[in-house]
Length: 409
Ligand code: SF4
Image 1 (cartoon, rainbow, N blue to C red):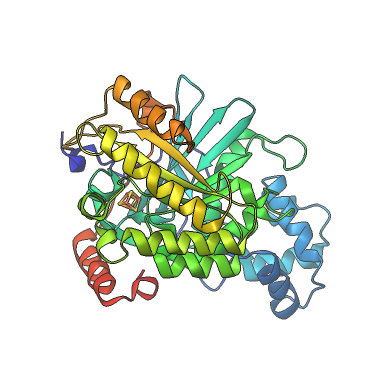
Image 2 (image 1 turned 60 degrees about the vertical axis):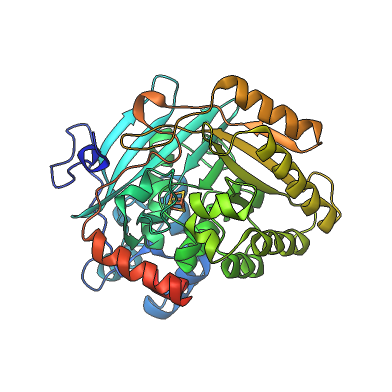
């Protein structure tokens, strides 16, 4: 089955068991002239209350709590707001979450949602519970233009960036389903921006959404519990370091430029030396933090002992440069095959050997357990319908070559 065969027709009506959440949209201003409150972090919402509604700024806090803590989206259900304020909110604002098109639990507790962002685009969000923590894997774009060779999302091409509302809306849908209450009944303990898309290519919307994730009036997650994963957009790593202190994960996947350029074409623009230098700057700005380097193990491609030794050297060089023990963590990810891929998962024995070689070189190394196999929930398997992908993908690649990534995304 080709990847296009595997795509889900989102023009179908939502499943009968799906939520009746109002449809989402690419329009960040909401339907008509109404503002979608999901698009606003604390400061923007306070500004909206003051400047548009003529209300006290602190009123915004009440609304944020209703939405993100109690999952109420109807202003009439926000009972501690006066009637006049509710009427103003109805006139100028709305709370519009993505539409749940499909809702799929896995036997091991993993849960996947297919969320409709507009009539032509859908993305997936995955919740993975594990030993006292619950991690939500969130998407930042519909598809992805970076074309990593081993990635299922890459086969779909790039369609568009998600708005702040569409990013935080994924968290809201999961939190509501789980009955998550920040600081009280916490089911959602971590968010990883590792779903579809390159988060740093959608910088402003991702940063604003992460600010709501970390806000006590939002989801109250500590900085270290929000992780942004990048394929290595060097200038944007520096920009992220200036405005945020979330955890950083880097999709490395190869220990040398020749192999990495083959697997992650972005490496041609930002080779390993430049990427590692940006990682050093990120860690130095935020003392005591570490960076996770993700390494997908593919049989006979990047899983041989010489690759492990090369990777260990790279990690030691990094730690020596920042003069910080355990500043680098390696997360080994056994490849999850998908229809049409030419890669295979490394044999278990090779994975263990690779891990041991790193550990013997005193590199902190973990192996990611595969979860949600029965619902194709593992990283790199997120699928969504992508329309008009050829033209947009070509435009995006062209902008990459020209160096205008953030503007074009
Ligand atoms: S691995 Fe990430 S950056 Fe690379 S193509 Fe897939 S979604 Fe995009």
